[in-house]
Image 1 (cartoon, rainbow over the protein chains, first blue to last red):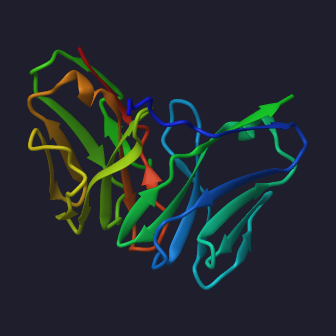
Image 2 (tube, rainbow over the protein chains, first blue to last red):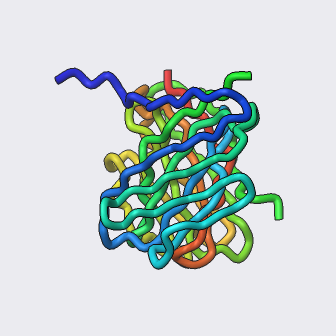
Length: 109
Length: 113
């Protein structure tokens, strides 16, 4: 079929609400996972990471949850702010880093 | 440290010309990655080095692409000859150790006309 490019999932949230961004990873042997934030015109920036021996890790306003049974990661952002608007990528590391396609977060004022 | 430094930030070139992208990783980092980002294919890993040695170049699209890392503080990605479909943003990233976060440069936006 015709390739139309990546369909980037978009999440729109109201400022102050919590955001949850989901990611499915592919390799059950992956043992390290990272969430990155990419703002327009910039390279991806590290937000938070988690190793496979953990289920949850908290940072400042962000929490990452790992469900190894279903190979699923989520990023929770508390009290979302306009500055959180960006594309968010999850990455898994098994010998090398594999990136997901990303989710665009729009924060409405 | 100033972070990962890429040059140039923007490059516009004509089809058939040689293009060289440059990257200076963070001092002390022992892994260096080259990625390409497009709307069509997202963020693709092209090649990565460990201690200046290419480890996996399976993501390099074709023989027109080559990458070198002559020392720990410098790497190049060369496209010869360039084609319009090579237009993309090319990122360089470096890490210390295998399981730590990657630090990305600002990217080089390449346009081949």
